[in-house]
Image (cartoon, rainbow, N blue to C red; front, side):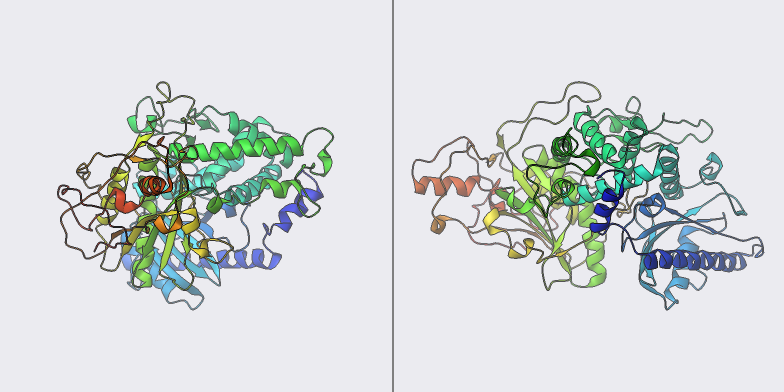
Length: 614
């Protein structure tokens, strides 16, 4: 990809641009929405006894649409800014006639209306004439808004509640990023390509510990400032080189962190905030109040992204090497007449053939309303399992849930498991990176912890189920291959990198330590175990946590074995792999009951057939 017609043709061939008709429709929808919120605020003013003639509300866009890098079918991140008399709880959300939610519900051109008032960034999700819209609301501490009001200034934040500050931050960050890039056209082309690359390589997802849209935008903007005259192709190449060699957790800063004593809002500062010191890949938002937009990144997901950065750097070195046709996009040794060098770079990551061992997290519910809420909650908790298990084994999560065919109220996340490798961190903010853990691990605690957090959700209802199980590569369901599954979009909300995931309930206390401290070994290519006869393979066991359970105990079972042991015969190999295989069968780690808050019971033998504990 270079700054010429060839690069534009490549991006177009990947369907990264919307049609003129869709672009026109988006503009019409935004115009309709602008008129609608002005009608709404006049109704609120009349309801509150405020002057109707002065009442107005403003609409702003942010995220990929504002940056100019959205593709066909993408949603539009929008922000409604209203005066002090229009509250989020009583006027934006609600079924009363004067509420914006009710006004949208009455319109025939609005479908799939879903209010999420309890989200970290509260949002109204809906479709208008087929265009998906995420609408946030910021209540400003001013009685009257005038056209042209600057939400980028400090006055917009004064006396705002936290939710309004977070809602405003999406627009403020997007606008600041655009102001900081020296060449907007080159920035947009490079960002489009890198978002495609990140999606296909499985590293595009803020909620599962990778990076979301705002993170990638800040990174590309940072590189574009380092190389202000670079073409899109050069920006992509330099992006991989810079990111592959960056000494994390040194933060990425587009501009110096701003402090405003009069507002006194907390900003990202590892010198003062202990939590900030634990961040592994700080990508700091450039607008006040500065925050780390990538706080979900774990050691394992950072390692996966570094692997992909190095791969990209190596391939770009071949593509743009002297003599490889720099002006035409270069050539790769593995390229074919039907595969361009840039297509090689964006080849999908072969996730389901890259690991011997996987965790499959199945999510299901009884009806559509509870399913959406339950899936959102479990997804927001997935980072707990990834981070905790990642301290013991290497975990690479696939960022998108897959939906089994014919089961619209179910989906599955998959985590690839492998032997723990040295830390990807060059150092921490306050010292050297910790050494890699020992080869003997016990994964009972991460599973217990994840189950405990998930099942303690205050809004959990009967029928909201989750099952976690270990599967070998050959045991993966057929629908994960060849596009047979219904892939969830998993679109990341780009509000200052925080997403609009549901706000966690108050964190319950940690569950008690498992009764057994036995260690489950880590599967590895070097383990030396022979492949056992198929007849000797035990069935995969299952961990289930079901809504409506009343058990108050957490029985556990675990087995252990030295990961370096070698089998002397097939029978011994079968026995050892039965233990080794999962980081093994989940029944070998733990069997949990749903609502247990009590202590651990005496370990029980793990069953050899699929088990569902209700």
